[in-house]
Image 1 (cartoon, rainbow, N blue to C red):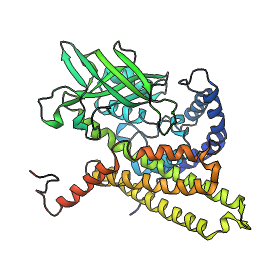
Image 2: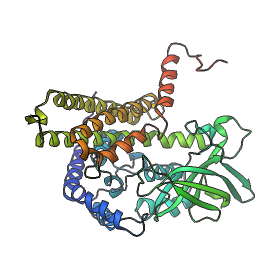
Image 3: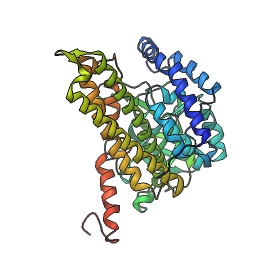
Image 4: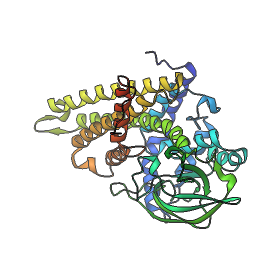
Length: 407
């Protein structure tokens, strides 16, 4: 299958790689230092704002936007750029291409009213604010979106929200000003029509950010917040789309989000392999370079093969999304969501082993890479749910009436 990039996409990729080499990699340690030394742990380090300004000046901004939404790139063209950005934990935000903002912006583009776009989408596209996405709940299995129990109740010209969310990514950041919240508007409707999504400004009375959740003991800059909604009132015109469309919107949002995660994860794996090779070539043990050990050569070779196979799978999925649409590519989207993080974890684990004790410290990005990618096997749907989805579609090829559970 031909995944050739257009000349414009190749040129943008070259500029992005040059920007990463000149501005991103050299400033990773400065970012970490400023973040650790800041009196406000949720404020954005100064270097981030400097880098974002440079990225905008360089025309490397909002690269994620699909062509149908005014962007310049197809999914196939964006994939290599997303991979490049994935090589550094700070890069996606620098180019205004980080989650959950990208997903929220796409939702607002597709389902937002003119006023919603003016008030929230425009400042998000400009990078002046950040956003949160509140869907997951601590008391239900949120991998099944139909289980979402938080209440969104109509009361005259307003909606009233009650419930508790967690893993609301980005909510702790001082620049996070708004959330998209998914909740139940009609518990008596068909299961796929019970939920709705609504825009809730973070400073709305009744919104309480209770705590930040760590991930394998680490706390990301924007945090993963637990948020309580107690009689939170917002105008009815804050609703996204129509009542009962929340499940459909969530599926539309998560499809692009999942492939973006996988694209970035290819970059994470590439950098882990690069660090593994560099370490192996610069360390000696038991009379020879680590790189001269047969086991290490096997790890390097296996990693190269696995990364390239995963990249082709992602590109094929991106091609299908471009040519037949996200719905038709649903099996492949689920497939890469299972395969790519699993591959990256193996590569990162090998790199950690080659680094020895250093591999689990803050002196390399490997430990944080592992924590982030391990979490990705749960985020946006756990592996088991995606495999169930793949199996169901595969079985229905042979029996269109097949049901996963007894009638």
